[in-house]
Image (tube, rainbow, N blue to C red; front, side, top):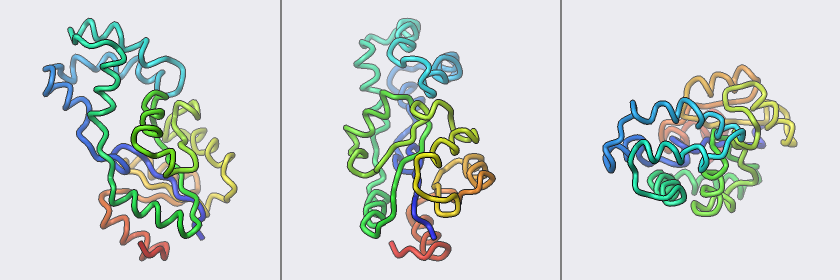
Length: 199
């Protein structure tokens, strides 16, 4: 019996445009130009080993973006602020039925703060297991081990919903239930037919 449901953020709870697309549309900055940042220092930010605002500053000069670091970070987070309200309502129903709901996401700390305070997830979830908090990213085994150490549940009582196949497979290999999220219709159907939840 499922007691805990973990939800990914981007692509599941949040369905806005990718920031790379917004940056290219607004400033003409291509993915090739941002690759060094997102495949470099940003990875350290995701696991809490570097500060996003400090690491992004030299790149803003390189990209010739006339915003302060704080303004740019706010612009970034707002561009991806598109909450999947239909799914949020189903999360609320799960909570009303006594299911413990948490978020499990690869995020750096400033975005976690934004998600909690500006997007209302602090009221929606008991905990947000971000990679910056855990110290490693999905799909590392250590990521799932850290989550399980803080849950009052066995692996077979825990479920993850994610939109990335390899994360779903890694969770299954670890021993927790995991499903690939595509849309709310599919979510509702699987929750009903496979797990007996009426949402």
